[in-house]
Image (tube, rainbow, N blue to C red; front, top):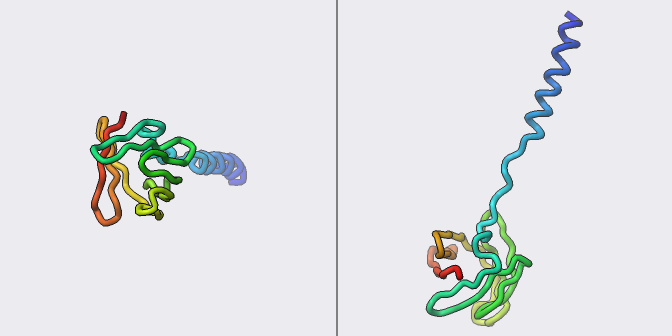
Length: 109
């Protein structure tokens, strides 16, 4: 019996290591297709930079949190504030969806 345990315990330990070292694929950045590209629509033009800033008709900083684009607008003051938005990329179009369900769509250039 002791010989069987001596053989089985290392195998169980190895199996435990295998399952704990396996990890899920890291979450994808929803902004990856638009980073450092110019986004335009009939009313505005801006770029979301890979350094955590965005510039153009609006400027500020952002982070990706829980798969959302969480941006803090600094200028213009009328848009100033922080808000997290869903990002939907479809081909050469990106849509930012606000918490109230309204959205803005842009062409990725």
